[in-house]
Length: 289
Ligand SMILES: Nc1ncnc2c1ncn2[C@@H]1O[C@H](COP(=O)(O)OP(=O)(O)OP(=O)(O)O)[C@@H](O)[C@H]1O
Ligand SMILES: [Mg+2]
Image 1 (cartoon, rainbow, N blue to C red):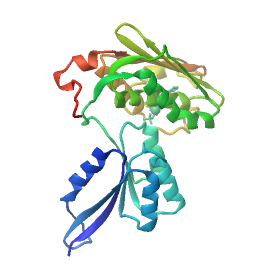
Image 2 (image 1 turned 90 degrees about the horizontal axis):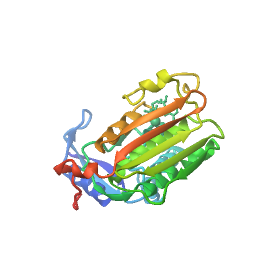
Image 3 (image 1 turned 90 degrees about the vertical axis):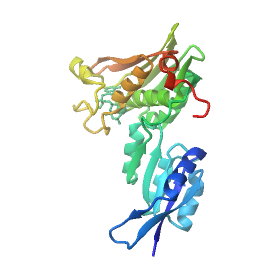
Image 4 (image 1 turned 135 degrees about the horizontal axis):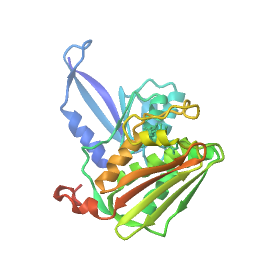
């Protein structure tokens, strides 16, 4: 007799819900302790609030949970489930999140976190970097407030360029979250956007623990984490800055750091305003993406 595993998908993007349903509809697995093949029964909802009600009424076997949802976030859902001692196996499926989100999700009981990665089609369009920066700053404010850190934003109004919004979010989320994470109680973070003729400059300055010249020289490679008395209790995977560097390169740009130990750091990303759209035929903006 065939068994069925119940999967609940929580994602506000219809494309994501449909994609998962299509991928799993005719997919079966064989499990050691089950005779015959196991099918998946899939149900999808758009927000965390509805998901929690469904889980309370009839817990699924597996929960596929997005982080950025219209109401409460995926991390909030995880928190509620942990409070209710739910044993649903949860996998976070989240695009563009910072790695901190993945780590927090795992700490709150998620079995695994899949961050959408390179296979995604880039969606290049003209957008306002100021607007993206403001939304990334909002995301980090709970952590900043917890450490009484003020976050200032300086930009000459809107700063327009051709870019993939998700890629800009990854750059800004990682730099701003680092500036908070490696800062001191009561410190300051300043995010400054500057538009030059053909380039956009994103500078994220902090009054945090800073880096020695040797430490600064090691950054931007995968899994590099500086180990000293300031960082020993801070969690991270050492991937954020290497990803920032890779994305900057997609825009013909780069990332650099200026820092003084115990005083603070400024990370600067330069992006060409139009190069991402013009370089490769395959990367042109797509209406159907
Ligand atoms: N603003 C900063 N001030 C001081 N040190 C920093 C700053 N940003 C990054 N670092 C140092 O660089 C290392 C690498 O940063 P990176 O963002 O790549 O990884 P992470 O923050 O450790 O983990 P994650 O992959 O979760 O971002 C950090 O571990 C930290 O030692
Ligand atoms: Mg980081």
